[in-house]
Length: 347
Image 1 (spheres, one colour):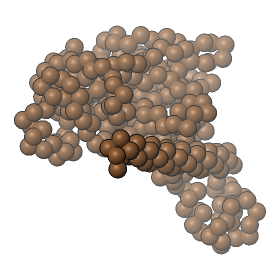
Image 2: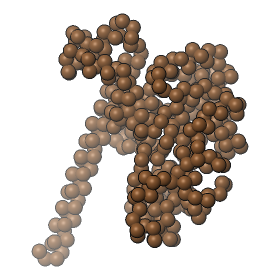
Image 3: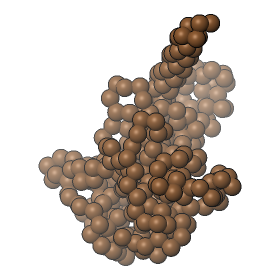
Image 4: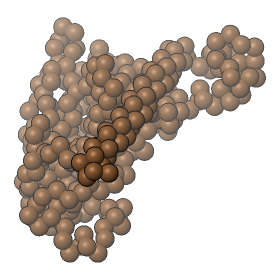
């Protein structure tokens, strides 16, 4: 375990410092969540590792969070986050699931084999762009691919300013460019499907076998789950690396800004349409359809934009309805409790 000499090694910065009161300085200690388990969290602070049992009264906590503890290492409060990576919970439930918080960059990892899918990459980019963290596309297994330049060019075409790096995760020289985002105090998360090489990259950047690794099945290139919990790892003299389990289901909700950023050229075209309420299907004067017809816009990309926009609108509306229902239910509970207390007092 790397020894902590100051909180800045763990990503502490003025953003969090400004949230402390004079009382906090005297009575509380800050610590960061570095592991998340079913019933407890593992935190790191200047005093070392701390295990914190989860309690229903606590807010939803996630790897990357900064919290204040009292002198007995009991939970006091959660500090405001400067970035948050979340998704609609898998399945049909109407909940938001936190994945990681307080990130500076996200390495979206995709392998150069049958896992290579631009539409899935756009889904990840939409979520990352919503957080405000910098997205870096890492294409792995370049040593097993005969068409690296062509596939890398396809990714770069999504956005000329997008950082796209093709690597062999087992070659230290190949992954050297990734270290530019791993400076001391910087937090980088690895996101991607199972088996694309996230744990291998972390081990190579750390210079040691920190995480278990496994390959992908040769018959269908489907990933095997290696990482089963989220964890934050401190690199000696460098940044913090966060590994996350591979996610096969990545539903969108409340990511309108992220969607606009990911498909910026389509949204710019939409503003040039003749009609403000243009659906970009068959209306006259549609700039989006014109760009599609003259080859400036790719049909796959436009179709995926429509698909993700519908999904985000539907899920966001469902979540908003649930929040409104929960708020009304909570108000009713408080009213009933108040009436009950007044009756007991004889009012």
